[in-house]
Length: 447
Image 1 (tube, rainbow, N blue to C red):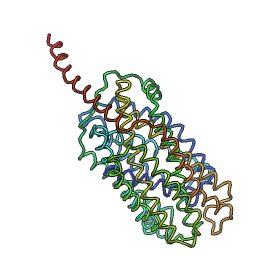
Image 2 (cartoon, one colour; image 1 turned 30 degrees about the vertical axis):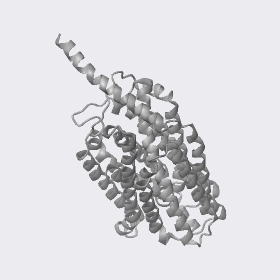
Image 3 (tube, rainbow, N blue to C red; image 1 turned 60 degrees about the vertical axis):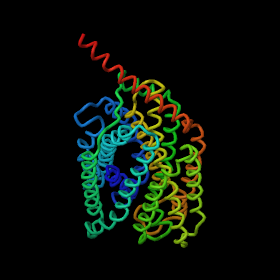
Image 4 (cartoon, rainbow, N blue to C red; image 1 turned 120 degrees about the vertical axis):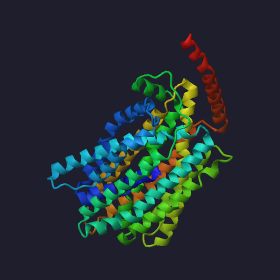
């Protein structure tokens, strides 16, 4: 349920923030794109730092759970502040946009790094983790479905013609929902498999050690490239529906249908892995995603039915890759434990979260710069042909090419089922040896 709450904010940002900045708030596309990219330099420091802090946390609530309690309210507040339009001049509004967006990304880091890392504390079985991630992303997408269904209607109802007021009120409700669901997640989870790390080092020593892990490097690159494509598509959705299709009236339906398809894809990813290696399944599905995305470019904007069919198929196939990828991150944690005898759970997830946000930044910046280059004018009733073509490519062909390229990168991922079984056996053996050493250490202290 925590992911449902997180996605109240995440999908709001993915679907609406770029459009809000250019067409409601009044930022130029170039300013927006530059801001999305520059803020990631802060994440380059804060994400690994948060991972290291989490790995060293000891509290009565556990290692990861307490952050759901501590950071829920600041995270919900950050969502609302990001969609507030202050009555400032141009320079003041740019400064506020930077400040509120930085605050949102910091709060996202503070709550999502421990939340993502907590999966490894719930079970140490690779198949169970994949199943867990499937349910997690099904519920996550359910949160996105709520956003797609109610966000724009809430803007209309609350704003009563004042779009800026409407967005602020709608996002305040989304933030409140996130707070409640993170509290619920905190109250109803229990850490069962927290590995003790007897050889803690500095943050930068941990990071250096992790960078020597070639499987971690593969997933880091995959996350950067993947999220670049996902954000190109997600951030251009509103522009695609309003400008390319010319059907602002179906914007909510368009997003709702896509989210329902995502839920189906997340649920059905786990059964695919019964007899196949994760990397092989991922490669097939991501190639199919690329083909389906690029195929949208070939459909006439007037053929709404065919566009919806492809969007549904793409939603099912693409989202089925997400739980697989996240379960691979858990496998990399186990691999690192056998490779260096270090439990870098928080560091693995925090650095990959940075990779995700770096991809988001590149994708968001590319959307902003492409719109500026093509002559897009926020709020205008008529756009140039170059702007329409740019939006169409951003939503269809370019993400398609990016998705297909991921299959090539994933060829370097080597943790197949056979290796994962060996890793699991080594970790079980090590856990037994630790249990045997505990009485010896205790007796030595008594002596």
